[in-house]
Length: 167
Image (cartoon, rainbow, N blue to C red; front, side, top):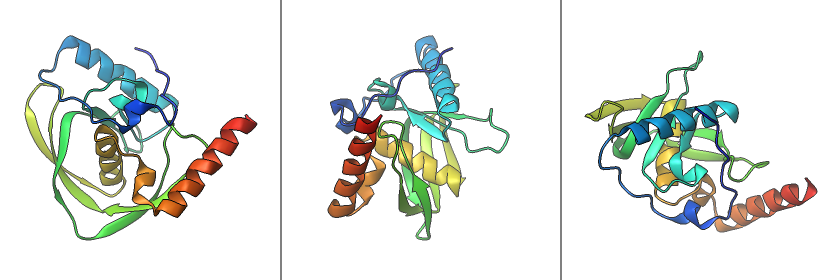
């Protein structure tokens, strides 16, 4: 498979809701493989299809220490989120050079269509939960910095733009 190019912010696709996936086809499996390769090349903990310009509700997440344990998800949705929050510094290859501390639920239960085409419910905790929520945000047309105040969001975007112009 191949690592793909991430679409730069502020491309419109990053603000659109992605379309549901009806079936797990060979084309979807090939796209997931490219997404895993892209995630590994960044390196990162997850990737949503919209980040590489594909408007489908597909995500991959791998927060394992040894890697190679990516969870492949189609149409992921959070069924339950813990009240306890966890802060983590988040970033995106779509807006390189910047990051921000974001608070999200520490644990989530997510339902998704898995690689075998079966509906699965899985609990994610810690970094796994953060990454899954980050990818689900992408699929809904949201970026991590949308969790910031308008002032902090604008400062972050301006800082990224300045870094892009420098080089």
